[in-house]
Amino acid sequence: MSWWNDDADDDDLDELDESDIRMRPNPKANKPRTKIRPAHEDAEVGMVLGVDRGRYTVMLGENTPEEHLISAVRARELRKKPIVTGDRVRVVGDLTGDEGSLSRLVGIEDRTTLLRRSADDTDQVERVIVANADQILIVVAAADPEPRTRLVDRYLIAALDAGIHPMLVVTKTDLADPTAFLEHFAGLELTVFLSSPTDTPLEAIGAALVGHTTVFVGHSGVGKSTLVNALVPSAQRAIGHVNQVTGRGRHTSSSTVSLRYHGAGGTGWVIDTPGVRSFGLGHIDPANILRAYPDLAAVADEVCPRGCTHLPSAPDCGLVEAVAEGRLGENGASRLDSLQRLLETFH
Image (cartoon, rainbow, N blue to C red; front, side, top):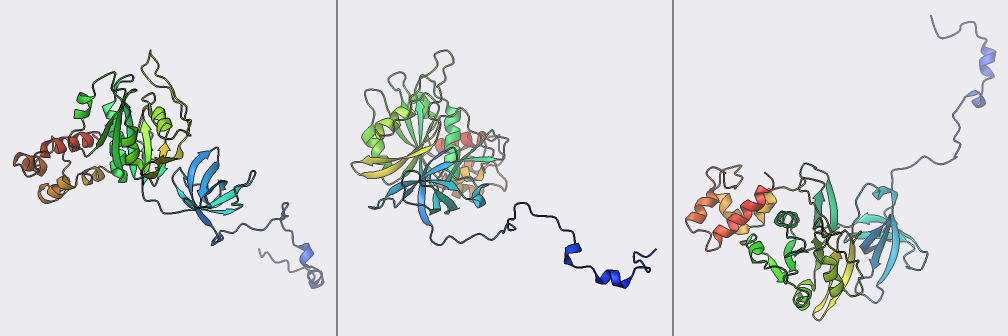
């Protein structure tokens, strides 16, 4: 049967007009959304100093007479992209920084480094902690709470994977001798500072901060916030205490913030992070750990079989033979042990 009605009168068809066509109304009377975004050629570049409930504190005009802070929110097109402390961002809108003013983040500049962690070792979803840091200062106590070598290992792995130079501060050395703990890291090129309540090497640590962006990390209760407050008196970071029953520190710093360090030799940036009790490495590529040992990596490329894990149990690992033959120098054995210890974290 044809859909056309042969009996219809042609005159009835002639009487139809546009008003007879039924269309769905648009109650909001708005225009269709476009995916074309403005170029924002007038955007200024600033640095994110902190994030608080969707509001970003951004510094514009760093190290110039026009340096000032603004408050900003992210644009719709960036809603699925993580923006963290240390990021260099493009901002538009009201950039005066006056009370009540608000600007928009419309872009993220290329990052030089990313310090990341995952929820656990099986989680491939990464959590970005800070961006564009070139140093990491790991703070650990010699006692109260007891030092956790495995947690420090994980900090080191994350730093080496990101290409960030690691440093270590051991606090509360008046309570325990950290020698045995530090032997665990022999062979790794690691700058170490020893600190106690009566002898805190603030000048030496401060000198290492000048000209760098350094992220401070550490287990709760190890004295990280105390150290930050001593280096940057205006920081006023909350200080916690160790639970005498559990031996664990209480989380006090709840946000990641960038603070400017002023020292005799110049300035630098200190990024203080909340204390953590776990640090997942599900996102790490073990190959990056070997690259942190250039001398071992060069030998491995020559003598190790394809797919070699470089673990003590690895068959025909050329690094073991190279150490036995003295090809890696006096520190070769300790450096290989350090590499193997870090790689074992993945197995």
